[in-house]
Length: 212
Ligand SMILES: [Zn+2]
Image 1 (spheres, rainbow, N blue to C red):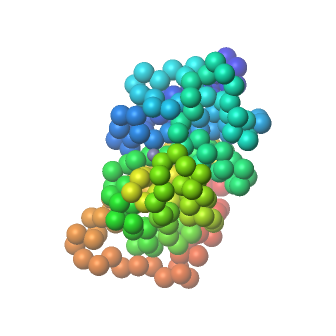
Image 2: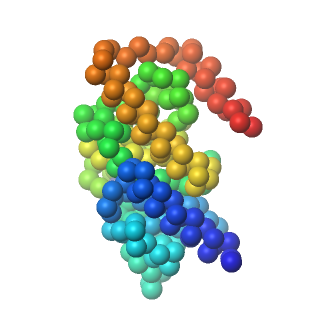
C-alpha cells in the first residue's frame, strides 16, 4: 500500500472516530493532514459513515485543487492557512463537539481552571470572534486565536485543534472537549479556581518535555 493510500485510510478512520466519540455528528467538522506540496482534507458535506479514501481532496499549499475530485471542506481556507503559518502543524482537526461549542456559543474562552489547559500550549484556550463559516474572515480570526496555541474555540461555531500528527490533533480535540465539559460542570457548582500565570508557564514548560 502506498504511503498516500495509508494516510487516506487513517484520515477516514479518524473521521469515524470523531463521529463515534460524539465529537462530530452528521456532516459537521473536517480534518486534514499536511503532505508534500499541500494537504489532504475531507470533502464538503461528507457523511462520515460512508466516507471513502477516494473522497478525500488534495489541495496545493496555495489552495488549488484539480478537477476530478470532490469539493473540499468549506473550511479549506483554515487548513491552508494553518499549514502556511504554522510549521509545527502537520494535521488539523475541526469539530463542533458539544461542550466546547456550548462555551463558544456564549463567547467564553477556557481559562486556566485546570493545569491540562496548558496542553494547548498556553494559559488559556481562546475563543475566536464569530465570522461566517467558510470565509477568509473566519480563518483570519482563527489564526489570531491560535497564536502561540495549538487549539482554539470559534465563537458560535466549534473547535480547532492542531497536531504534529493526525493522532496528536485528534487527541487534542478530544482533550479540549473534555476540558470544556469539566469547566462547564465546575461552573454549575461554583466559581472555578484559576491557576496563576506563573504556575501555567511552569506546566507549559513541563509539557514540552512530557513523554519525550
Ligand atoms: Zn465547522
